[in-house]
Length: 211
Length: 209
Image (cartoon, rainbow over all chains, first blue to last red; front, side):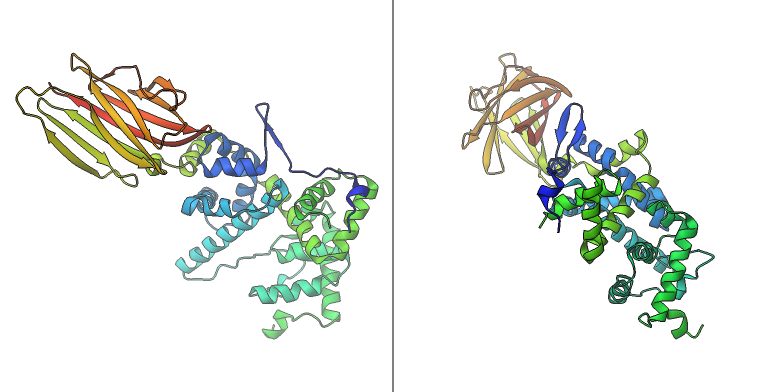
């Protein structure tokens, strides 16, 4: 449990500086829902990289289209999505926006795959060394939650690698995110899978499919 | 317990290596022992990585997106068309949601009748605002004054042909614009309260005397 006194921080809302004025995240969102151009400019400055990063990483559509779809979702029904944010910090909004973007892209990918009349996997992993099927690909939230429970039993360093892998990141991306050598990541993935298999706490999809 | 929002800020600092050794150890322990905190930590790692992979907005993209995300005026904007004819006044007014015009016409072809003030009332956010148009003596322009019921404090900016012409700083102190509005002209009156634009009214004037 964190003791504020031990940390000695004053963790109030993170403030942004622009043109000698300071904005709180609540002010920024309030300005955006009121259609203020300067607020949206600040929003673009602070969050456009996240929107484009997710669109680039997750979307099967063109990045430009995906970015526009995300912004449209943010403003539809009189800025409902922005108004729903009830946090008060930059970090909280970062996480909120990430989830919104991810859900929008997921829905769009689903629509796109239905249009093309064939299934496009939502979490493609092209790692050549570790077969992604060997840890199973959860088909729904319940399966995902079960898998997460198993992963939580692993040691810390292994745990974070496996959660990122479950979230669809490739080994080299995980290495970049966690600032680890690629070989370390690959080793941890391999050992995690071995551990999970050994404990017989994971349903191995490849086995159930008869592979 | 540390408030959740504060924890997110601390986590970001932890990921970015900005905490002291003691502080970082505290956070590490917390991440290790709490699934919720661990998931928040991983999620923030992801967000920061995705931001790194994203790109800054370019000018053309910014302009396109700004048009997309800023509220269009149609919800808070009505349009009036006022035509002063020789013995008639025709007023057409749009709805606040759509620019579908509904018009009314008044005839004054009585012997000895003179052009007098014309008023149009609309309700915005519980305030009935009456626009009073008074023709000038030479009938080539009109003067605009306002009446608010209930009387409310806001400022009103008059723009003529897309240029700001005059501002009433407080509608409690003054309700008349002194600038003559020529005909024909495009006029806009924007109402501001607490630095926030409440609504605007566009008026097209046309006089045929």
